[in-house]
Amino acid sequence: MTEPAASERANRFARLRAATDRVPTKWFAGIGTALFLAVTAAFGGLAPVAADDEPALARLAAGDTHTSRQLAITVQRAVLIDELRGSGSFADEEKGERLLVLLIEMENRWNVPLRTFGTEGVMDAVRLDGDDRAATGIVREDDQTFTPWLQPGVPALLVFSWTVPGTAYADGDELKIVLRDSTLQVGQLLYTGDTWGEPSPAAIVTARIEDVGAGAEESQ
Amino acid sequence: MRPALTWATAVVLLVAAWLVAAVTPDGEQRMADPFRVSAEIGTPAEGRNVGVTIRNLTLADRVTTGGWFAEGTWLVVELDAWAVHTELPASLGVAYLVLGDRTFAASERPGGYDTDASLYGTGLRVGFRQSGSLAFELPEDAATESGTLQLALGLTSSAIDPEPSLQGDSVIELPVDLATLPHVAERALPPTEWAAR
Amino acid sequence: MRRSWWRRNAAALCALVVLIPASVVALDILEFGAVRNATRAVAAGETTRIDGWEFGPVTVAPLDADAVGAPAGSSPVVVTIPVAAGPQGVSCLLPSVHEPTTGREWRTITTLEWQPDPEDPTFCTSEPTVPYDLSYAVLLPGDAGGPLVVELPLGTPDGLIDVSFDIGG
Image (cartoon, rainbow over all chains, first blue to last red; front, side, top):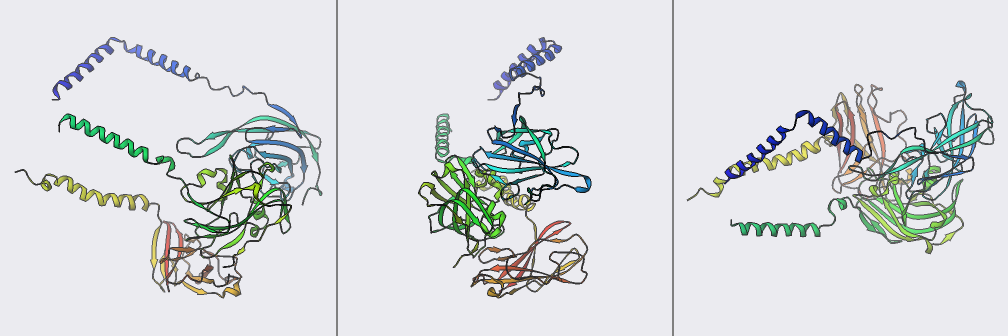
């Protein structure tokens, strides 16, 4: 019962071998490369996306609002201060450190709550130009709630603070603040749920720094 | 067996398999569905690991506790809560208000000021009911919406992804219509206490 | 006459007799055994030795509910774990009280008006070479009768061990 099938299969293999025998071996490399290039071309080419193909960054001033799918961000003030209790940031006086503080109104434009300290991109949304650190302290301006949650649609006035060398910034400096947008990545394969990632610069806010010295009126 | 019988058997089995698949609820996607327990105001609702009696809901323009206050559009939910069989762990950390396509989590702000000002994230006890409140900070335009209050044990950090945090266990659900609730100018948040038995 | 069905299928049946229990063992002990902690049960009034440390006999003593601010009708208790410390490497997590008859479990409570002896350490430490007591308050409901078990998870160089101390009625 199996005999005729086996010999039929053997015939097919033999014919295939005979056919491939006629193609010179070095042609296989050429054909393979051509196929590979054709397929990659269909998927957009081999060249990586040019990193310095800078999309036009919006130029904003203090008080202007930058809106992304996730957040609406309004930088209101930039302040240089010796220390600010309750801000989450600490300046080492002996090292000559001070705090750079930004007063920012943020609104969660997404449909679930966001943490200001998590990986959902809120912490990554604000950077001082030339400094790739996230803020060392993020608190609410009204009740100093530490690393607050942002509820959807509820704006909150936040204090972002960085510990900086005392000589890095001065009163009257035009500070450039980079606002970065994160993209929503829907869970795939093993990961359920959505996450935000890949923060990339979307706007630059220029704000004049006010040096308030020891800032008695700022601390609570 | 004769070929005709073999083929007939195969077709019957295929049809049967198709019927079973069609009748079974969505298989893998539904495997982790939460076990929903419906609640009514004033009536205890108990799931596998958590029980609550929601006593009332109020909208307020300003909420206070001790020296802390906050203004806005706040929903205050007063409730008793308890753990059913184990306190290890039993944190009331899943408290969502789903209005339309937005999900709000209970506010961490009152509890951050005073741990006795909110039941959010509180460890519940077996054999003891604690009475207190949950406060939700909402946008102004939500004051007339309707939706669902969802309560379950879990970590407060899971609010960033509400759907997965509800999977696989009991969730107490109460339909809410904010437009029908009393709306007061100011509401003092009740302190967390042992509920009278 | 052909051989009986049993003899014709003897090989397959033998395989089943071996494979079915083996699967149960593999799925339970091998798969989940790696995830479950090692356990050790200690009878009432007994002590147990682990890595040169001695624990027990564990006692549960009642507190006055009104005096410590516990709800009326409740049974707050103090769980006392005598410890004779050994070399470093053993650590204790917080104990919990279990009621095997109902499956209920309670953790410690710190908001009652009760404090342990300030002389005693509050966690497992090798420092005091004299034996000391670890004491914790646990709030039990008034109906938590019946035999109780105090579970104390211990961290050792070989991993976690859940030690269960029988308390009795």
